[in-house]
Image: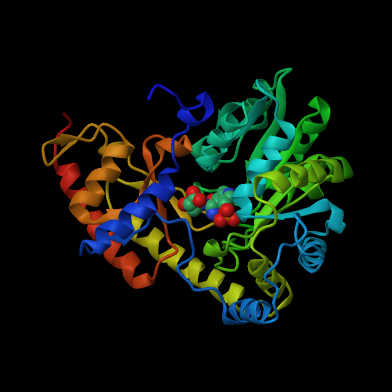
Length: 404
Ligand code: PMP
Ligand code: GLU
């Protein structure tokens, strides 16, 4: 057969995070005691009141197609949430619900990117952003941030990358993988630059609830009326309500862009799962104690992981203020030999750690963070302690070896 794949699909690198999640499941099925710090999802189950609402929806026959952009009650609940939590005034026609934040994020790019358009990606950033941009024919323009700035981007670095072709900037605070929560100053500077140079802002706020140590999540859409109009705000239910498997996310933005996303979605997938949508209404309108408890637990686990890391010579990290990740600097381990293999980069480090210490982490490379690996602390305290014991042993052995 000589038929080929499309250039777009032929060029995609499948998601490393999802590949690693699948690998952990496979190794566990083979009987290995793997501690998974790679998965970017809460280990908690979906709160019972949300599950009950889904059951009710099924029993009441809410099992049909819905409006492409979501049932009105869910879109209204999202408007209410955005007004209450962020002071942002939206109407239902400003909202589209889709199959996870992932789908609406992709659709947002689809709605605004023509081939050759540039999308500025402050980095490190979630590994799907660059791939999604390429899938739309766009060009990702990476702007590195510095560890000494707490991985908050510098506006001068961003401004230096703006060209005639800049169509959007895609930002994410609280950030995956750095855990940084960007300041109002940085957000304001980005909003002003976007207004001056006239490009879109896509703001991925999926970790909005996960902030610690008195940090505050601020939406860039609140910076000004102009910022609100040019921002496509992305969020969802996966993290805050432990609903990763339900596939429920949403975008809020100008009616024109939401209508374009709606048209695209109407052909690509149609509405997201009707039952998940009814569950989503309960998530937003029902009691919020379970969210608070989860965030509190993540806060304690964060402290625990950080205190373990501080005791391990050879690895360091900055204190994450949000999300549930630690970006671990493993630069000192690179170039050393372990079990006869040279640790040439973070990918090899992660491979060896999985093979010899049975701890899975995500290499920083795909997040534009070479020399780092990402650890999730959305696992129990007991598993964190055991994982850190294994990592300490592994890194201790690595540090005893000379460089190759
Ligand atoms: N944005 C970021 C930064 C993420 O880490 C993820 C992964 N959950 C998503 C978006 C997509 O989330 P969802 O499960 O809602 O598709
Ligand atoms: N976003 C999560 C992560 O970064 C979940 C996996 C994915 O969708 O990439 O691990």
